[in-house]
Picture 1: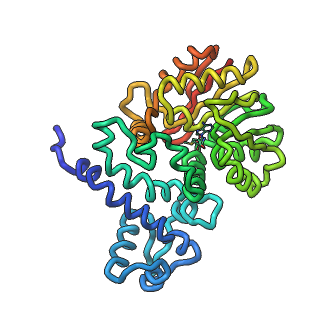
Picture 2: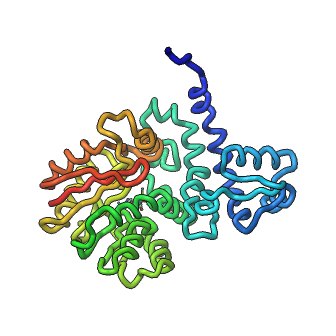
Picture 3: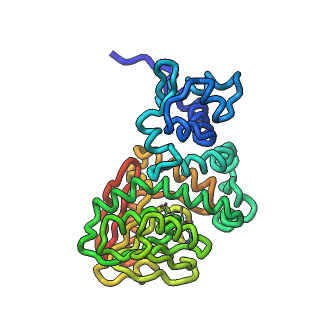
Length: 336
Ligand SMILES: C[S@@+](CC[C@H](N)C(=O)[O-])C[C@H]1O[C@@H](n2cnc3c(N)ncnc32)[C@H](O)[C@@H]1O
């Protein structure tokens, strides 16, 4: 018996922006941070986060229906996940990524059709084409972008710590380290490792503050530089997380060649991203991430494991493999 077609999936996807924006506004308003202090009734919560009477009940009950809040005996409380991940007071907070989605990507994605027709970015770099110069011109935007990167790489950082044979290695460089989520996670997991965070010089204070709070600044250093103009620091392992997808194919190849040059024989390069499946039909997040690169950058795009392994081989890497990390993320490993 064939199942009758229904429009449900079409409507769910078509109106996905309703639930997306409800979550993003809830993070912006601090709903989950307030409720992490204890359950609250409608009037008290609405007052604390500044909701209008007309909006409060529907907004909060929508969050209940979306399973982001619970409600019992007239009191709202966080779900287990929102309490862990969206309370700004906890170190496990990943809302920086959603804050960036709310303040930057939500409006930029409104111009997706224009990006699809022109191939041009639709964000702050629309006129200049230089994403990082546009982002880092404003110190607040610099900070919030780097914090957002911690949200996007926190799960992958744990998985890279668990799945790569670090006991055999002594040092690593995290190229484009941002706030330092991967650098810090590895240093905390393996006291024998010496780590370097390499990034643009403007990133240094934000990196050092984060590494300092995490208690690893004695084993982790920051090196400022420009990975197009300068050689990469040498180490047993070079990590590039969400770096290659920012750039066009010529630039990707150049960065892979620089990583090869900076590694000793037997050294390893780890590229982690939302690697697209080779058939390009399963990893929807990876494909949407690539469209996000269309919106955000002048020539960036995401890629499959087969693509990345072929570029690594061209750069001279002798062995390559792909290993899944967590959710949509995988790492591609090249050994020199
Ligand atoms: C998309 S973020 C990725 C951050 C982090 N690796 C992660 O996975 O979350 C790209 C990083 O590359 C850095 N970057 C951009 N251009 C650079 C350049 N020319 N030289 C060094 N770092 C650069 C940015 O400052 C930013 O931290």
